[in-house]
Image 1: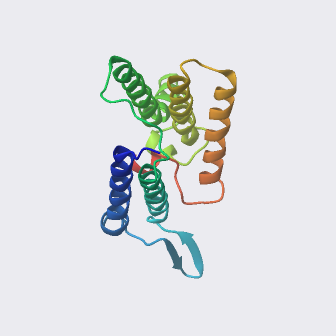
Image 2: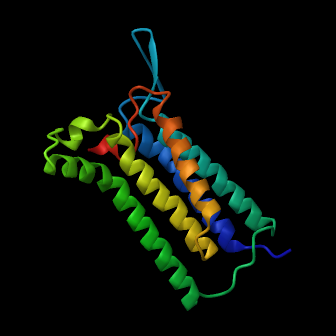
Length: 190
C-alpha cells in the first residue's frame, strides 16, 4: 500500500489546530467552564460545545493522519485540474448561501412581519421565540447539508433532501429542547 503524505499532514495539522483551540483559544474566550453549578442548579457552560467539537476534530485529524501513514487513504491524483476547481467553486457557493441563510433568514422574516403590520418587535427581542429562532438554523442548515450532498453526488436526490431535512431537524431538537438557556446558531451573536 502507498502512503499518502497529504492525508498525514492535513490530519496532523487539523489535530494540532484542534488541540491549540482546546488548550489556548476556548479557555481564554469563554466566560464559563464546561459545566457550571450555581445555587444547586447545574447547566452546561459556554466552553462545552466548542470543546466537544475540538475534541472530535482532533480525533478525526489523528484518524486521517493514521490512515495516510498506514497507506489506507484514497490515492490522490497529482495537481489540481479544472474539474477540481469547478467542484471547489460549487461547494464554496453552497457554503456561502447556507451561511447567509443561517444568519439572515430570521431577521428577514421578522422584518417582513413588521413590514406587513405585525409589529412584533426586533429580531433581537425574539431570539428564543418559535418559529423565529428556528428559521435560519433550519433553512441555512438544510441548504448546507443538502447542497453539499448535491455537489458531491453531482445531482439532487429526493432521499438526500429527506436525510438533510431530518438531520437538521434532529440537530435543532437535540440542541434546543433539552437546554433552556442554549440558543441555536447564529442567535447567540445577535
